[in-house]
Image 1 (cartoon, rainbow, N blue to C red):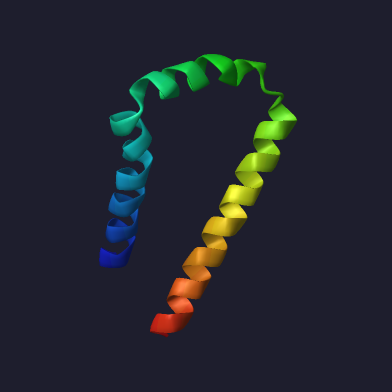
Image 2 (image 1 turned 90 degrees about the vertical axis):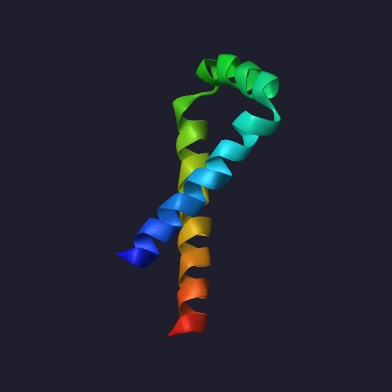
Length: 64
């Protein structure tokens, strides 16, 4: 559970960086988001999840 909470907290830090450093760009991107087709967003989301799983796997392999 400690590992999960640490990972969740780290994810929140990384998610917050663009909002803190580039708030105007985030707002601009958010306005353009509805123009992007759902299929494109799904492909991007899928690849991000796969990269995330790979990172978690590689990180766990070094500890195990």
